[in-house]
Amino acid sequence: EPEVTQTPSHQVTQMGQEVILRCVPISNHLYFYWYRQILGQKVEFLVSFYNNEISEKSEIFDDQFSVERPDGSNFTLKIRSTKLEDSAMYFCASSAGGVEKLFFGSGTQLSVL
Amino acid sequence: AQTVTQSQPEMSVQEAETVTLSCTYDTSESNYYLFWYKQPPSRQMILVIRQEAYKQQNATENRFSVNFQKAAKSFSLKISDSQLGDTAMYFCAFETSGSRLTFGEGTQLTVNP
Image (cartoon, rainbow over all chains, first blue to last red; front, side, top):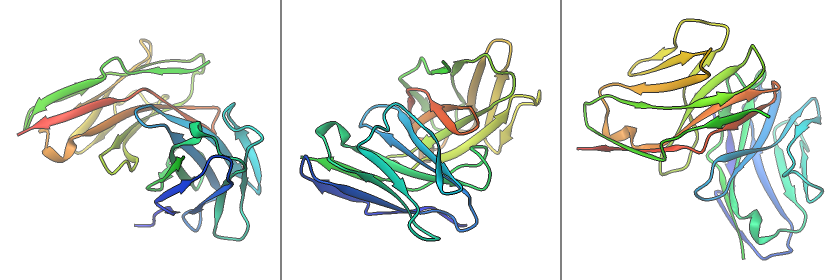
């Protein structure tokens, strides 16, 4: 079965540093998403991306965050200057058409020290 | 704003027994999707079952079924013949605006041998 792949599985960084989280969505999917989950809390929507642009973003997704699809296969989330509160599990997801059948990756655990 | 509420932070059940997890939601929309996701200790998000609001028939996937009460805005998950591998956090989720999922706080289910 096809799957969404995220790398790395665990990233440790110093406060103030830039990080890029990488995702390879399922190949024929057109809709891409980032969600995050702070430990012990619920999963929160960050951003959705379609046709090479952001289609929706949440209030969490401020100017420190950006997304990009640099080539035909990767989808990245960049955090420009990490804060302690950015420590969370970040999930990439993709679908062929909307959220009705969303496939999640296994997540990247980001630890900001 | 759409909200999803799971009022049971923790539940436990004996192996082979049946358990029901509760979920309520609030929306003014008439057409939407509802989901249950399972998150085992690996923290991967796994789709368990989904329900389209315009369908009156309750969704079923093997041992998993839902009781969807649209007027009451209730969407409970029933797990029959519980297995040790069902031990996980279960999140109820609601699709809003066609682009994002809104998750509940989660219910930690433990299946005891």
